[in-house]
Amino acid sequence: MAVVPRRPKGPPLNALRAFEAAARLESFVLAAEELGVTAGAISQHIKALETWAGTSLFERRAQGVSLSASGRKLREEFTQAFDLLSAATQSLRNLAPNPEIHIAALPAIAQLWLPERLGKLREKYPDLNVSVTAMESPPSLARELFDLSVFFSVPPEAKNPIVLAQDTILPVCAPALVDGLDLESVQLLHDQTWQDDWLMWSEATGVAVGDPARGPRYSLYALALEEAKSGAGVLMGHVCLIEKALQSGALKRVSSQGIRTGKVLSLELPHKSRRHPRIDEVVRLLREEE
Amino acid sequence: MAVVPRRPKGPPLNALRAFEAAARLESFVLAAEELGVTAGAISQHIKALETWAGTSLFERRAQGVSLSASGRKLREEFTQAFDLLSAATQSLRNLAPNPEIHIAALPAIAQLWLPERLGKLREKYPDLNVSVTAMESPPSLARELFDLSVFFSVPPEAKNPIVLAQDTILPVCAPALVDGLDLESVQLLHDQTWQDDWLMWSEATGVAVGDPARGPRYSLYALALEEAKSGAGVLMGHVCLIEKALQSGALKRVSSQGIRTGKVLSLELPHKSRRHPRIDEVVRLLREEE
DNA sequence: TTTCTTGGCATAGAAAAACTAAGTCTGAGA
DNA sequence: TCTCAGACTTAGTTTTTCTATGCCAAGAAA
Image 1 (cartoon, helix red, strand yellow):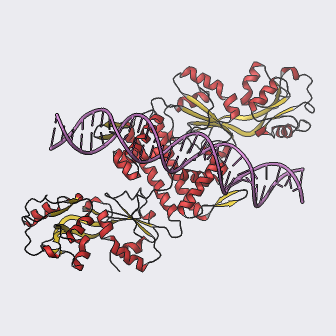
Image 2: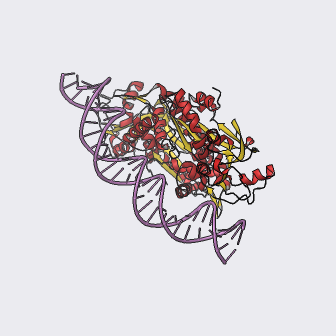
Image 3: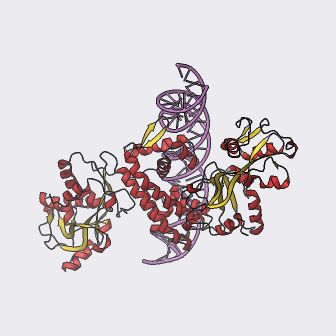
């Protein structure tokens, strides 16, 4: 009692941030991904915080963590605080004379859809400073420092998406393969993350394709596309991503029956108060309004 | 253009905290003190942040820094964010089974006023876990993790102070010295931070004391008090701090003319939403209501 | 003037924190 | 039963952060 220690320090800020992310996502792995570190780091942060607070924050289960009752109450407070902090940081970034425009997109979109548009953008506004980060799932724009994101989503999912295109799929292959093609026996090419494209198309059109799961899988859609161009098989093409290959004749439609997947190519922006000063120019161009 | 780097990281959180403190206090030195580090550390954080943002945040002058126009706009945002964060941290701390009660006080108060009360407190609630930190100026209770502070202040200064006592001063000395004492020639004892006590008293009472600045200075009031007890001279006594010495007879009043300094001994609490669950018991006892 | 004091800057080295990598453990589902 | 996902642990490394020191400039004081 009545010791006189040095000024008491709060817990490490990074540990608080780790807690907030883990609490919001209810997963150390997802939190780690959002913060760009390994899950082990998150685990350590949480442990440090639990030690500091003298209380346990998560209930560890073998297949994932869940917030303990006490942790749940805190989540809201911390999320609010870090949202504000993130907004302030965005303002700070926008102070710079010509701040970079950070775009987040699905790898396939980043490789196949964006480049052409960004080329035009650069032509029109040569001073803009754009960078693109590819990732599997859309970042929280309230938290991460992106100025714009382009992903596929099912419509009621996002808050205020700007719909750029419907996602329409139809099979395509190299011109050499197209004559006398038998969809029931030819190799089918798949993207890792869109494994049921073939099944969906076959069911929707009634066209028989044999085993819809046969054939090689690629971790990148752009890779599958290259393979298709060189005649490795038939790819289920997402129209908005293969426009260029169709125009140039590098790929041909195998069937004219395109179907909608129900997803849309959607563009999202952060809250108004934290938008990049020149984001409107970019959005207008991406929507092809000019 | 269109590189695909790893997930972009924001600036280090600690740098943001340093900026917030420096911006609010408009001084690296004060910010360093608040955060419990050296000024050099703050300087480095700010520089890192300025590099990250590509903009300068402070205008450096030889006798201190001032916020640049762009920095000023950000201050409010960051202060809000860190206030929230600090509140959330407080909630976290209060989750623990029996969280410590952190008291901040002026060194003199921590040494001379608190101990007796804390003794009673311990007697009445033996399970309470109290710690005391001495510091020269009152901490921001919205920011630092204190549950209660006791300082001298001039009334309109604090937001919601609980006034514990008026600050009344009068000269005291050891019993052996009191007979035939000549205030114009005896040694006067001073506390470093209350150098004008003697002048104020002399002017208010009209009693001549010779040169009011003569005699030794002590960096701690408790030290001056000990010296007075052992007969080194006459101390300007702050009544609320020397009650015990007067009661025990270790010190005698040299004059019965006490005057008010205009300051009050005041107790402050953080905002309601972040108070320690058992703070009311402590406050009641410190106010001597029970 | 000259000197002193205050507040900030730069740098090197030391200390602390954060991160990764690799292996372990556990429960769920095939 | 086997496999897998998700979390944990630990050791070692890398990165960040901090301190200590000396320096400099401008205002205050002598």
